[in-house]
Image (cartoon, rainbow, N blue to C red; front, side, top):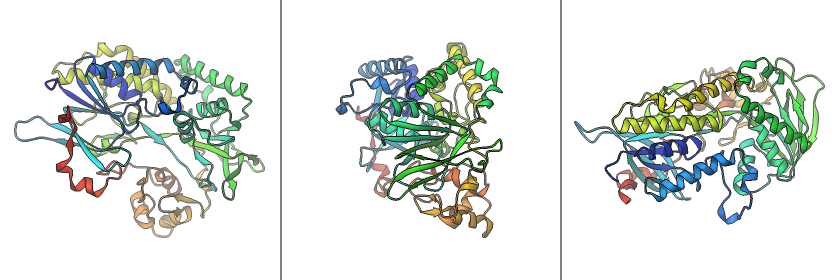
Amino acid sequence: MTERPHLAVVGAGPAGLAASLAAAARGVRVTLVDAAEEAGGQFYRQPAAAFGARRPQALHHAWRTWERLRAGLDSYIAAGHVRHLMDHHVWCVERKSEGAGDEDHFVVHALRGPAQEEGVALRADAVLLATGGYEKVLPFPGWTLPGVLTAGGAQAMLKGGLVLPGRTAVVAGTGPLLLPVATGLAAAGARVAALVESADPGAFLRRPSALTAQPGKLAEGAWYAARLLRHRVRVLVRHTVVEAHGTDRLEAVTVAALDAHGRVGPGSERRIRCDTLAVGHGMLAHTDLAETLGCRLTGTDVHVDGEQRTDVPGVWAAGEATGIGGATLALAEGHIAGRSIAARLHGTRPDPRAWAAAARARTRLRAFFAALDPVYEPPAGWADRVTDDTVVCRCEEVTAGEVRAAVGGLGAGDLRTVKLLTRAGMGWCQGRMCGPAVAGLTGCPLTPARRPLARPVPLGVLAGRDEEQDEEQCD
C-alpha cells in the first residue's frame, strides 16, 4: 500500500468526496482531511448520531446522491484505500523538496481535535483543494443584535443541530441559498413571516438560454416555489432589509421596496415582527490555502484548467473554491479532478474522453451560474444605508464611520491601508467576514489577502513544527 501514490484531499464536501472516490477507484491512496466530524461538507451536513434523527433526509435535497457518496466512501475506507481524518483543521500546505534530484512533495499541516492545540503533518504526492466557500456578509443598522444570523448559519443549526434559531423568522438578502433556508425553517416548524429577495425576477426572463439549458434547475425552483406556497410564506421580491430592531435581542425588521437602480423607494418601508433574521448576500470562495501555495486567482476564485489543475504543479482545486456554483457543479469538478490526479500520479496521460459527461455538465453549469451571478448582486445602494455608528468589523468593533474617515479624511486607497488605519480585518476572522463590507463602503476593490496561515494557530504548534506527528507514518 505504501508504494501507491498518495493524494491529500482537503475538504469532504461534494467536490472532495467525488475526487476521493474517483482517485481511489484508480489505484491512488487517498487521505481525506476535513474539519467536521462527519463527511458531507455544508451541503450534506448531518446531525450527530447522538441526536438519533429518524428522518435526516427531510432536511436535504438530493439525498440519494449523498447516500451513494457515503456508501462509496465507507467501502473504500473499509478496503484501506481511503483514510478519513475527521476534526482536522488544515492551516497550511507546503510544497517541499528533500534535495537535489528528489521530486517535490507536499506537507499538509493541520490542528487535531476540538482544542486544536495538537499539530499533525501529512506528506502527499499531490493535493486537491476542495475548501468550499463562505458567506458574504453585508452590514446594516441592527445586524449585530442577537437573533440576526447568516442564512447559512440558520441552515447549519437546523441540519447539524436539529435546532430552530427562532419561532418567527424572516429570510432575506439575495441568492439561491435563501430558498432552501426558508423552506427548511418552515418545514421544521418555524413561521417564516417573509422571504425578502432583492433580485428582480424579470432579470431571469432576460436570460432564457441559460435557464432552458438547465431544466433540472427550473424544476428545482418550481419545487421550492410550491413549498413556499404550501407553508404560506410571503415572498417580497425587489425588497431589502434596511434595519433590524430590538433591545436585548431582535424584535422586528424594517424592509423596503427597491427601484430599478437598487435604491429604496420613498414610503415603501414596512415593519415585520420576528425573533430571527437569516440574511445572506451570496458566497465567496475559500482560497487561503491556494494563495499560500502561490496558485493564481481569477478575481476571487482559484484558476484551474480543463483538468481542474492549478498553475502550481501537483495542486488541483475543485468545487466552490474555483467559483460558486452549487453541489452538482462541485461533484462534476471533483470527478474530473480525481480522474486527472490518478492518471498524472500513475505517469499516464489523462484521456478527457473518460470524463466527457462530467465536463459537459461542468460547462453547462458554469454558464448557468455565470448568467445568474449579475442577477444576484447585492442592491447597488446598500452601502449608503449603513449609518456611521453601525459596527462593520465585529472582531475589532470598527464602525462604518471610522472606515469612511480612513478614506475621506486620511487618504486610504486600498483595503490594506484601511486595515492599518482602522484595525478592520485584524481580528480573529482576519477580514473574511468584514472584507466585502469594507470594500463596499470605501469603493476599494475586494482583493484576496495572501496569508501564510489559513487559520489561527497556537504558538506552541508553530514552535514545534519539526516535532509534528507525521500522520502518514502512523499506519
